[in-house]
Amino acid sequence: MTKHFTPAPKARGIVMVRADASNPTQVLADMKRAFEEFKAEREAEIADLKKGQQDVVRSEKIDKINTEISALQTSLDEANSTLAALRTGGNGGAGVDPDVAAHSTAFNSWFRRGERAIDANLHDLEVKAALTTESDPDGGYLVPEEMSTEIDRVVGTISAMRELATVMSIGTDTYKKLVSMGGAGSGWVGEKEKRDETGTPTLRELIFNTQELYANPAATQKALDDSRLDIAQWLANEVSTEFAEQEGLAFISGDGVNKPRGVMAYDTVANASYAWGKIGFVASGNAGGFAAPTSSVSPADCLIDLYYALKQQYRNGASWLMSDATMGKVRKFKDAEGNFIWAPPAGTADVPTILGKPVSTDDNMDAVAANKFPISFGNFKRGYLIIDRFGIRVLRDPYTNKPYVHFYTTKRVGGGVQNFEAIKHLKIST
Image 1 (cartoon, one colour):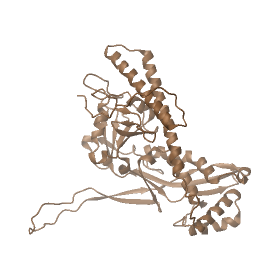
Image 2 (cartoon, rainbow, N blue to C red; image 1 turned 180 degrees about the horizontal axis):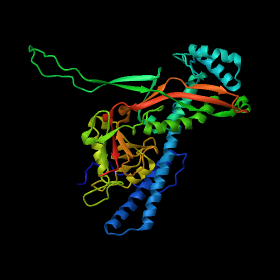
Image 3 (cartoon, rainbow, N blue to C red; image 1 turned 60 degrees about the vertical axis):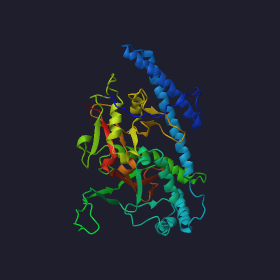
Image 4 (tube, one colour; image 1 turned 135 degrees about the vertical axis):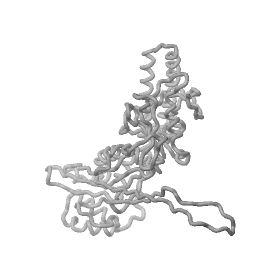
C-alpha cells in the first residue's frame, strides 16, 4: 500500500533568471526556478509512462535540469561555506595573551627559517602558552592557536560529517563514555507504604581512540622568505584538502583500524530486529534499486518507512545523508498525494529537504546498487561522535627534498557511533 506523508508547502514558481554564483540569493532563485521546471517535465513524463509511452527527449531534458539543480546547490553550499568561514574569524588581536603572542612569533620565525636558537625555546613557549598538556614523542611543534583554528575551520567546511555529528576536543588520546541501557526499576507507592529495592540500570562503556592523520606539504625556501606569505593560510590551504578527504572517507566507511570507525562500518540488522550495537535498516523494496511506481506503490514509500523507523525523540534533529547521485534519483520521487518529497532550500542559508528534513550530501556514501546502503537518516548529533586531540603538530624537514622544505603536519582524530538508536540506514533489497 502506498504510504501517506503530510507534504511540505509547495515552492512557488520563479521567473527564470540565470544565477550569479557569487550571489547566494540569485542562486537560490535559479534553483527554485529550475525545480519548478523539473516538476512540470517530470509530471508530463509520469503521465506518458502511465500511457505506456516514453519521450526520450523529455527524459534527457529532465536529467539535464536535475544536474543543473545539483550544480546550483553546490554553488550555494560553497557560498555559505565562505560566509561561515568569515563569521568564524579570530578576535582581531584583542586581548592576546603575551605568552601566546610570543609563541606565535617564535613559531613563524622557525617555520620560515628553522633557526636553532628559536628551536630550543619553542617547547617551553608551548607550555607557557598552554598549548600542550603532556610531552609528545614524535617531534615537531604545536602550531599557534590561530593557525590551528584556521586549519580546523577550512577542514570543517568540507566534511559533511563534521557538520552533522557532535565534535569534541580532548586532551588525551582516548575518550570513554558510559551509556545506560535502561533497567532501573520504579513503581507507584502510597505516602506511608514500604519502598522495595529497585533494579539498577545496565551500563555499557564506549571507547573512542584518536588516530594520527598527516599531510606533508612543501614550499621553496624562497617562498618562505617572502614576508607577504601568510603562513597560517598557506598551511591551512595545503593540508585542508588532504585532511578533509581522509577524514570524510573515514567518518563514512572507515574500519576503525588506524582510523575512525565510519557510520556505515557497523553491523546492520533489519529494523524490526534492532539490537544495541547494530544499526537498523529498512529495505528499499527492490533488489537492484527503488521500487517501480504503480497505482499502489511509490519509490518514496521506503523513505517514508525509513523516516518512521527512527524513534520520535530523535526525529526532531534528524537529517538525511546520501551522495549527490542518489539525491538526483530521490528528487524524482512523489508521495501518495502527488507531492514531490524533495524541496529546494527555503533560504540562502538553508539546505534542501526530503519529507521536511534537511539533506546533506557526501559522495563517500554508497551508490544505489544491490545490498548497498546509499541513504542514512538519523540524528547524527546524538548518534555519531568525532573527537579531536588538542593540537596540530608540524615537523620542519629541509633535507629530504632540496630545495623544498617539507612540513610534516599531523593531527589526531577519532570517531564512531555513540548512540545506535539514533541512526537508520536504507538497504537496497526486497
